[in-house]
Image (cartoon, rainbow, N blue to C red; front, side, top):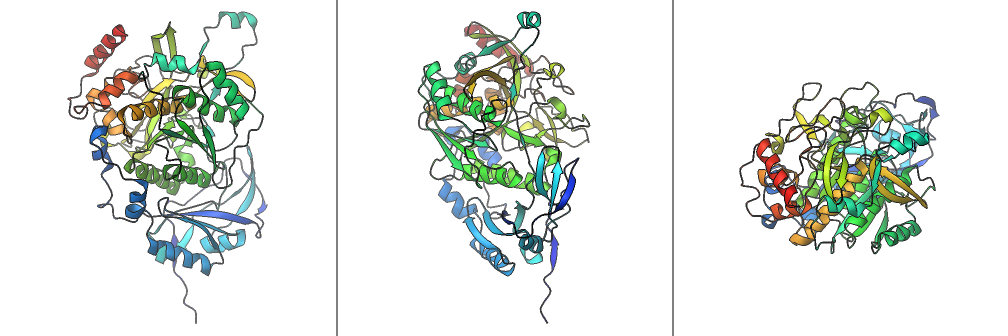
Length: 555
C-alpha cells in the first residue's frame, strides 16, 4: 500500500478574492502556466550579516558581499533545490529555471497539475479591472518541505500593484486656468534646487527600474534628452516572466510611469546606465523582477527604483515576507532600493478611508519616498510643503505606519506614532521630494509633452542622486536607512513642517507625510563621506532646523 504523504498549509499563503469579483468558471485544466517557488536562505539567521549594524557605518567603512559571495553563502541550498526537483517530478511538473541567489525555482505545468500539487482550486473571475485566474484559501505543501518553501507565486495572476504617478489635470475654465498657481519644472531644475553634488553624473553606475506594464519609445527618449541638451542614457530592457517593453500609445496609462521613471533618473544622472526590468503585474512578476534586478550579475544595478505598490492589506503574508526578505538580501550586496510611498494620502486609496501604508514602501529595508509641493525663487527653494491635492482629485503623498512590519531600531527616536490598530510599526516615508502635479515635471510620453507628478517621480529622483553619490564616494552607499536617521546625516535634509496627507500632519523632525524631508544633495554627500557620520550625537529638531536655515542662506 502506497504511503500517504502528509501535507500542511503553507504559512502566510491564505488569500481572498478581489472585491467585486464574479466567478466565470473553472480555469482551463490544460492551460500551461509557470509558478515561482521561493526558498529559504542557505544560511541560518545567526550566519546572515547584521544589516542594521552594517548600515550604521559610514559607506567607507562598510564591507558588502559580492553577488557571487551572496550566492554561495546565502543562496538557496542545493539540497533544498534537489527536494523541489523531486516534488516537481512526483507531480508531473517541469523545472524551467533555478537560481540560487534569487532563491527561486521556476516550475511549469498544467493548471490541473498545479492544482493537485498545491491543493488549490483555480477559477477564472471577472473583476472591475478585467479577468484573471484566482484562488482563495491556503496553499498546501508536503510536510517534508516545511521551512524550505517560503512562498509559492503564480497560481493566482490577479493584478497586484498600481503605478504611483499623477498627470496634471487640465483646467477647462480659462479664467480658472489663468488664475491657477501651477508651475512645472524641467528635471535638472529640481536637481539644482536640491543642490545635487556638482561634478557628478552617475558615471559607472547602473540604475535598475521595475515596471509592471507599459513601455518606452526610443524616439521619445532621444527627443526628450535632446531638448534638455543632455546625452540620452543607455537604456536596456530586461524581460522577466515574459514581460516586455510594450508601449501602449496611451500617454495617460502605464507608458506615463515608464517614461517618467527613465526621464527623471536619466536627467539627474545622465552618465548612469538604466536597466528596465519589465514584468507582468502579478505578485509573482513583481517579486521575480525585484530578485532579478538585485542579483543581476551582468548589469549590476547599485540602486533600484520602484514606483509601483499597493496597500499592505492587498498582499498575502507570504508575499510581504518574501519581498521584505529579498530587500534585506539586497542590503548585504550594497544595493539601495527606493520605493514610492503612494499617491492617495494617508488612506492609500482603501475604500474604508482608514490610514494605511503602501507596500513595498513599508519594508524596513527600502528607502520610502514621499512627496512635496515645491516652490522656487529663481533656482532656490522659497517654500516647500506636503503634497496634498486630494480636494482637486490630483492625489496626495502616501505615508503612515505599518501594521505588518515592526518599528525598526533606526526609527526608535523618530517619534513614530502607533498604527491605527495599535501596532508599533515602521513609519513611512523616510524621505521626500517634489511630487505635486501642480509643481510637476515636464516629460515626454508617447510623443506628447505633459506634466506629471506623484511619488513615482521621487523614487527615480533619489535613485539618480544616490547614483551620483556612489560615483563620488567610489563605493555603493547600499542600505541607507540606519545612517539616514543619525544626527549628522539627518540634518542635511530640508525638514518639511507644513501640510498634511489626511490623517497625519507635518512637523519638526520625522513625520508620516514627508519623512525626514527633502535632500540637500551636496550636504548629504559630505555627511556620508564623513567618518563621524554614525557617531555624532543627534540634534534636537530645533537645532536641525537652525542648521538647515544657515545652509539655505549660504546657498
